[in-house]
Length: 425
Ligand SMILES: [Zn+2]
Image 1 (tube, protein in one colour):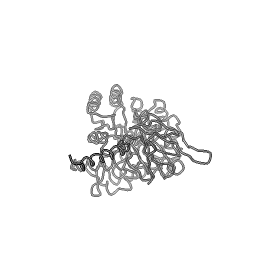
Image 2 (tube, protein in one colour):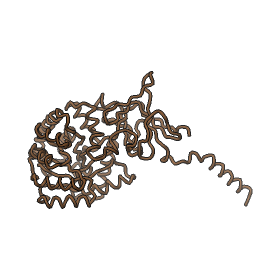
Image 3 (cartoon, rainbow, N blue to C red):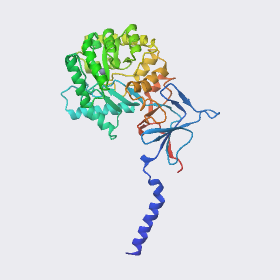
Image 4 (cartoon, helix red, strand yellow):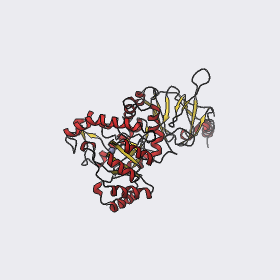
């Protein structure tokens, strides 16, 4: 062995030993989010002051979880300085259709090659996550399963997805057949069951599923530990779903005070979609027109529908015990704009901004059975954390300016150009 070779080896060893501390993989280091204003998702504002103005609090993340909130910083941490921003839990959209998209300025149909459809769905997942939505519920599409599982593997960026797979309708069969289909969905890997109990708003929204069908489907789902979310526009369809023990009412454009009372009494969640879906249809009219029931008459109805659903929402707000959750019914053209619902609810609907934020975070998490996992910033929760330029409680438009997105401890968006440093080891 030549002397030169020995020297080279020794140098290599020295280099290795000197560099050893920094060889700890970055992904194993704790992450600290340093924040001045934290809205915890449960109605609390954690503002830190040091007597001279704003100081900072550290949210400590180890692996996928929040492990501590306080003054101390663990050694070797990577620190993100979010003190200029407003920090909240990742938002939740309990009703978004990731597979809907445009192709060549038209709503893409079922004849599209599946690989192309999948890539568009991935686009929509990324847009949704980048807008600060770390969890969504999709009601529903059989193709969701592959996308849900791929995102959960952690390679493809996107929100956590819950899916009903293929929804059930009045045409799915009599009550016994519906019970069988509910069991089948569970076997197929559905996270919950989606039912259509009424016509669309474009067709007046009258009840389609019978009371017995709803009782069969929601009863079977409950016995299997599955939630049921029900598309229901008319008061009678919402009432029938509530009495059948279903978990949540979607849209509910014509729900009455009497039925809201009943829903509040039964703990049935209400997911009004008043701020994005109709507006998006109208803005993109030419891309939908002529397909299915997207005709002139349907669009005229949707134009009127905007004020109908807004009035119903205002009525719902007068029922303090009613659990109003956050969903947009995002379809083609709407993905990544899921925060518009918040803006319309607060600005036009008169909802208290803190209540709207709770709706978009902890209350929606609770409605999905994820209340102990996501939707609030506290020790032990998944580190689903976002930050806004501005405070959405004071300026609703700040909801559009998400500059930082972390999901399960991993940073996906960091547009704040904040310095990040390593704390002393
Ligand atoms: Zn929908």
